[in-house]
Image (cartoon, rainbow, N blue to C red; front, top):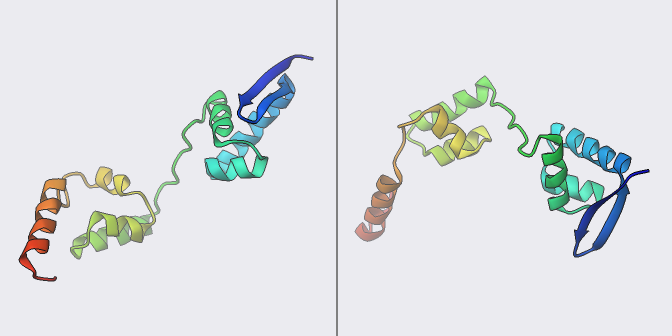
Length: 129
């Protein structure tokens, strides 16, 4: 029986057999594939988020794959942008990250400098849109 020190953090040292360690890694990998977050997995298994990350790295899945957007989600985001909405609003509407939309439609929308200039003008002009 091979013994492996898995965690030596603030909570003390946890000693597990190699088989127990491999089983925990498999369990964390399965929960990750189900779409569970690092925090969710840590709560389910009663371990720290760092432990979950370590096991994900060991399993080769440190970054869970994002779920691709459906055609309907893309269409909803496109409509918001076409109607003059911001990328942030479109991302909220489609249920995705803002970066996903910027990668899909590069060069569209306002740059940070344009958004900053607009916000400055709105604040200093006293005009409310």
